[in-house]
Length: 93
Image 1: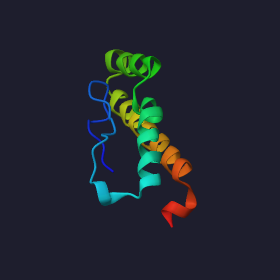
Image 2: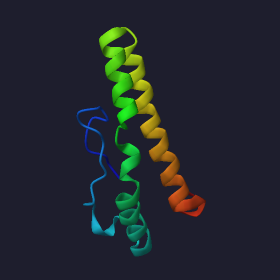
Image 3: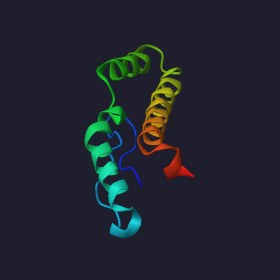
């Protein structure tokens, strides 16, 4: 699995639906396609995140990179948690 984008406000990540056919079994492939359709929004920046980052960038420039990194990390952790939950322990072992 790979992600396209920079995980930034301008270019948030998105999960492409094209991957090698033999990469997953049929049930896992269907689960991944369903995951992509339903969970893409966890990678998108919310309005609150955008406003917070832009506010920091305008009024506290030294703090802005830290805030940006925190939001990017939260997107990654949310994606990771959802993937583990969706596919279960048996898939990962």
